[in-house]
Length: 427
Image (cartoon, one colour):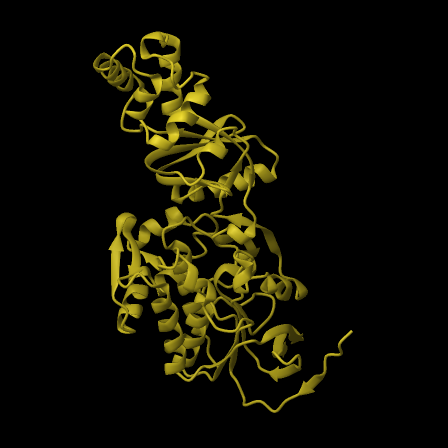
């Protein structure tokens, strides 16, 4: 086994060390330096903000422009606890921050805010420039191995550099912004939970949130890569509908995904962990009632020739890739003459169009999850400062906390708000 040499190094004096160079960590580091602290940021990967650079499919939905009072409706855990951080650094604060950093923004459907360039790198670079403008020292390829605590307060930490040397720093304030365990390839591997657990913090059960859902429905293999717009999806747990969402979704090798499914996944994952039955029903015609759809089908059939196939009718109602799968679902041959289709088969078609049912057997793992649910218990963190209520000088920011929200820019806003508040610490 290769021996790791531990060395005591002569470091400059730091007031604050931030662990993790993601959205929360960069915001915390820049803010801490701006208010007068000498700050070191340690990032385990080769460059900061790797997750920011890929979020939103490379476009970065950095916040949501809805009124602040509506944010709580989209925060799934500890929304009330988050109010202080959100009021201190609002979505409007985030937008002004990036605009002042030279990033032009656009607001799209659902009040989602993106860089006008469509490049997530602009957000990542702005955060890094913010830190460098206030002389934050950013050190990459540096993995923190231990936070040193004595008598209920932080007095230093140890980290390993890329050469394998373990170095020690004396510091009284540490901000843990290590993220969760979603997208582990970006460096989010749960380090912060370990640090918190070692000093006695409670870690709420960690599980994927905003993640694709797996179905064993027999038609899944025929509809991979199909995108659906303007559909309504209903989530059923143990036979009862618990949530519904309207918008876009898709099918892939991972299962059901897209914005609608991600928003439903939070409740679906929790139900699956409790071993409850879960299914999703898709209303492909949400603008039509069953009666109106029935009349629409009658009109379509009246315009068709007797020798036209059943598939032609289905094609008039749904996107082409769904025609054969729906015929299979109904157990009606796609080439059955329309004149031979029974009233019962038409009724079954209506039922499927208004409630195509997909049993959910599992959820995609953390590598596909947008965020992590669970984390450091907020009941043990001061909501006014982000400081641990157990260890003086230990602060938390971002996804490492037990706070998560719906898709739409809310989770990055949580990172910015908690990071900013943590960074306001005094020497």
